[in-house]
Amino acid sequence: MTEAAAPVPVAGVAMTAIGIAVVRARETERADRLYSDPFAQWFVDAAKPSFAERWDQLTPVLDLFYPARTVAVRLVDDRVKAAVREGIRQIVVFGAGLDTRAFRMDLPAETRLFEVDLPETFAFKEPVLTRGGATPRCERHVLPVDLRDDWAHALPAQGFRPEEPTLWVDEGVLGYLLRPDARRVLTTLDELSAPGSRFDLSSFAVDPNSGAFLALRRLVSGSDAGEPEAAGLGADIEEWLHEHGWDTSYQTWAEQAASVGRPDTDGGRETRTIAAIRR
Image 1 (cartoon, rainbow, N blue to C red):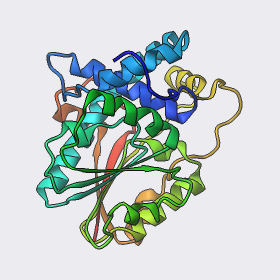
Image 2: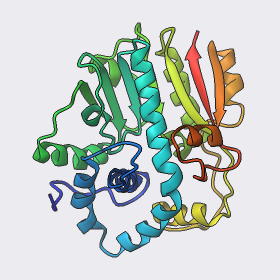
Image 3: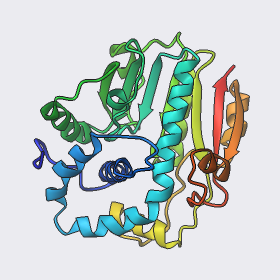
Image 4: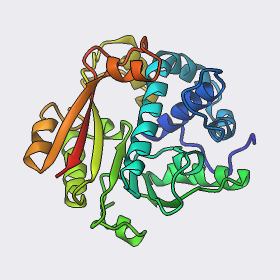
């Protein structure tokens, strides 16, 4: 598979989905891989011709982020497995990008997995999966909608059941949204969450002057000029969750990385994951 059936998202945040597919493809090739994603290479092959010389810019950035990002993929896989073991059969993935968990994980057939992302991402993703003959192992629902828009009304139309517990998955997209937009997503998530619902999020300090941060910013926006606006959920998110009926616990990055055999990955000295369960 070497050609894309639709324009490849090579600009802005949507473009980062390609980078994560490269990470997953690279991990799949390792003898000591943390997971296997045979579909990731499909996206890489389909996208690469559209990047032209920018592919050479993408590679060094991925080299910086790969060690921690690939561990993060495995950690989300583990959380999905844990939620399924506890009986959750409804999963919503924010900023799903080129995620393939509906295809590569052994999920119960009755599981309803909802992928939410920009229309241009799915315009590229769906033809690649179709051409390859990929078949989801569970009920997969695609919602081509911007999280800054009214995504909540799109969910029930696809079969989402707010009376049932949900696993909400965010692999970083909320960190790209401006603070008010990210908080609106969280408020809606809270309103749609039945008791027993789960939401895991990462909380970490970022050095805006670090080489890795500047490289990613240049790649996504084309510039590293100016001060970034406040984005993500903010430092007081754990307090907000408690006030709105969620119990929380957390693990440091070091603890999580060591649990999957990659203790030397650099997730940031202050990185931790907050696990929240709706009371």
